[in-house]
Image (cartoon, rainbow, N blue to C red):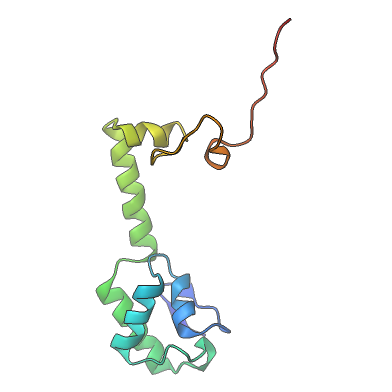
Length: 121
């Protein structure tokens, strides 16, 4: 079983796709990791040797901030925005879209289901 940074990689996927199950590793970074460690990106995760898994693990830990550390950093960045009361921080606090999207008709994913109001006659 391939376990990198505390995450089990999906056994049936190719190594290049399996590495993307790590938070902070996308297609480009997965390809670079395979090249730098000399692992064939087309092999399946179940076929990796222990030596290849250890090479991948050390490369990920040495080069990139992934999983828990990255999640903490992102959460700290959002908390900082909220603490300094910036516009983006206020949008995060109010659970509204942060990046300038319209909210008059859309933004249901971010705002949640509609709250109907009762109209008086």
